[in-house]
Image (cartoon, rainbow, N blue to C red; front, side):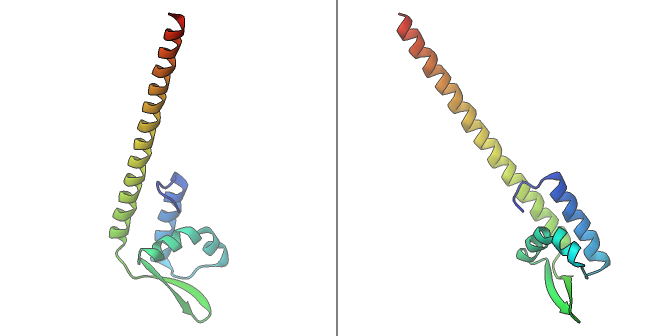
Length: 109
């Protein structure tokens, strides 16, 4: 998952949190659906994979509120970067337009 998260990715995270709180066991189809979200949660130390009698189980070992706050902060950082990139691009376009306009004026005179 890359930040900022899309609406669908946020929905998958929300569904995954509900699933983890009700049952730690996942079917193969669920594992495929939640693969990216589970890997993000594992990287941040929120869940751990356990093998329970041949079935894969993800156990919550961290604080869900801390993880939610971390996700919000990462989304904000990614959006700020995007805004900065847009400002740079718009500024460069304006400068380019002004230079082009000045060159046109010089040719006319």
